[in-house]
Length: 178
Image (cartoon, rainbow, N blue to C red; front, side):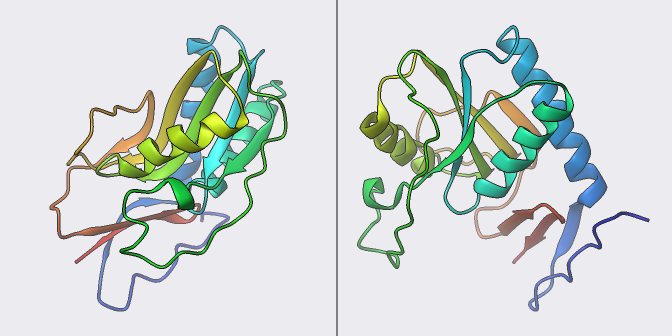
């Protein structure tokens, strides 16, 4: 039995595509890939996108510590950099960037990659904190449907979906619903 019980599907119904154990395996695999791609973890900073990417950034950070890699983990709020700011409720949070990012490799982390617009906003927000040497992207779920030329470097699960489906990714699992 998994140490994290799977959450109940959304009230309108849903299908689990990953459970907590699969999420854990994907997180560990992504941590290994980050170390491998960057030839270690020196100069790497992990930043989760508020709100969905913070849990995943923390999980990847923990998996890296389990590998003996000490990587700073923080969060970045993209609220005021979004191109749909007038179309959705604005609930800004505080960014917490634990170290200077100049000349570092920043791994932006989000739960679900869909159109790419949130990642574009994150790239704009990142400029407020410095000029990284490189920016990489880690996501738990890549849905496709990109509207911008953005591609993740590290993916937990490629999950083709219909545009009208919702995908929710948490530490407890990934659910698709209509």
